Structure formats: C-alpha cells, structure tokens
Image 1 (cartoon, rainbow, N blue to C red):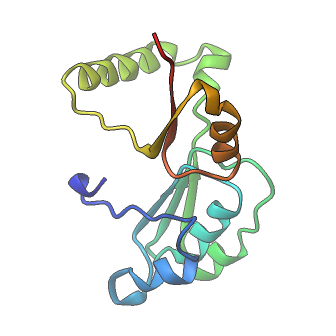
Image 2 (image 1 turned 180 degrees about the vertical axis):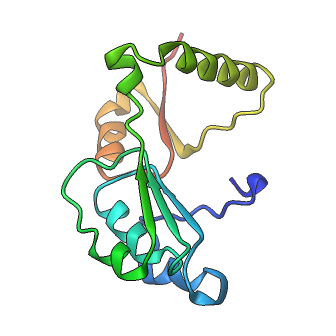
Length: 145
C-alpha cells in the first residue's frame, strides 16, 4: 500500500481518533478506502477531510449513519462488487479486470497480507478462532504432503 502512496490503518490496533491524528494537520484524509465495512466504515465517515474528503467502501452493507459524513461536507461511494457476477451485466469488463490481476500475479507484483502465524492441520480450531477474532492478514493452514 505504501508503494502506491497510501497509508494502511490497522483498525484493530488504532481508534478512529488515533488515525485521524495521523492525517495531515490532523484535519482528516482526502480518501478513505474501507474494505471491512460495519463499524470500520462508520469510523471512515468520521475521519475524511472536511468538504473535500471521500469515503469509499466495497463492503457498505448494514445500517450506517451518514450524519458524521454529512457534517464534514464529505462524500461516499459504495461499490457492490458482486453485481456484475449476479446480473451478468458488465461481466466482460470484470473478465478484463481479472485478466489484469492474473497478469500482475504472474509477474509477482501482488503481495497478499498474511498473518505472521502459519497453522498446521492439527491447529484448525486455533486457525478458525484467529479468523473469528479478526486476525490481521489472511490465515494460512499448511497441509502436510
């Protein structure tokens, strides 16, 4: 993320007030891209820059109060990423996106965020618990040959 000029926020380790304080002059962020939804999206509405800030989410389901966003004079966009797959509309474009993602993956330019712990098959319950607890990064379960 940093390579693209973005600043990753660990919502499990920082409150909205703490990551607001990291923004330029503590005035909020130009763009907040939320991939978690729920209360994290609600916090995103509170930390965008006044008047010019924009919150964006690919997981905007649920009931959210737009008041904090409105009081900042900021905007919000939600993207329902499954719509093309469910409706068939723009499916070709999604194929183009996936082809580009494949190209990046094959060029080793994609880096998944992995949890620091690797579980084995005897630790399936612990791996599931880590996911339930909101682990940072994807959980890996090593399956012995």
